[in-house]
Image: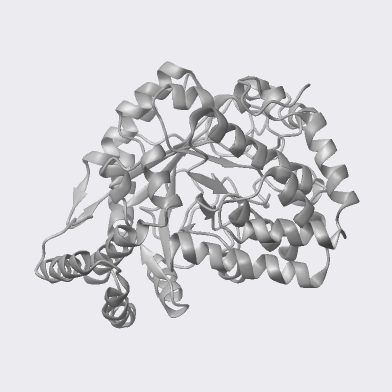
Length: 472
């Protein structure tokens, strides 16, 4: 198929032939120091790279170039996102699923996994448990099943989540990770007040995709790959991409992922709000070693760095699939959002013991939210529970305009400090609170605008007095 970034056909904006040509070009120029130097100079402008340029850097194994990639990614991350790390939690609503995805334990042929679907009363209990940890932002997940998990059920769950107020707790943003659907259904999700619509491609390699999704509606590669265009047509202007690294060759996935980002920019004027970086992990009846495309921690870190360089404005997400050491490294090179104290079972937060019978994947980082918050601060990062942009209407092109112009410091930085203050007062241990108060005092001085800095200080005092939910 002819490559066309502006095409609305999946096989044209993710052209297999274009990816293959890109990989050949990257191999041919992997040691072309003049070209590599030119690409790095372009990258230093902080405006991104296209899929061909980035693929050359990924193919290059010259140690000095790799070091420059990591250094540059770290600088671009600071330029766009400062030292803030947004925290969220996933909430699995149901693991009923009609698809046959061979890498997921929820696949329809798995007859021994416990199937579960949360009632609205159970959703409410889970939300209270999450609020009592200190969470303000959720990503809801559900298997694809029109009988057990129709859109009406998802919408009802969103309404329940937003309606719960417990002590000082409130979920202020619900992101949604559910199966590809119609423009009308995306419109209904938008009307329900969702934040970002997230859908992992799993793999952009169509032949592999069809084998990995042998049965069920997800088998339709084109319908799945074109979902983001329908979401945007339905009014959702914040969408999140991602592939599951380990299913296919990582260089293929990387090039195609960037092509998808370029397509969204070309057609809608807005690239992906987020890009997630999951790797396949062990689960109920899933053995990661059955897939022969696994990548090392070193390659994974380089991928994260190159996504940051190539799509500098995007929010990059890493989940508790990765252990503390890996998360610590990739946060430095580009990741701006992480999950904390996650449970990948259906529900499970309201239970003292972590349930394993309905987990989608093994959780590598099992620390409490308080421990994650303290760890971030000890590394010099501000844990942020901010949801202000979504609630102030700074989404889509309005968010991108602020982010690309690097003007977020006067919004995101004070919002991060104020939501951290709420966490410290309402949920933190004494040790975490002491570290956090020192951080807020120091970071308040880093707000560029004098008026914003003064207002933030006033809001912080009011939060101390018991008032909540200030935002810029």
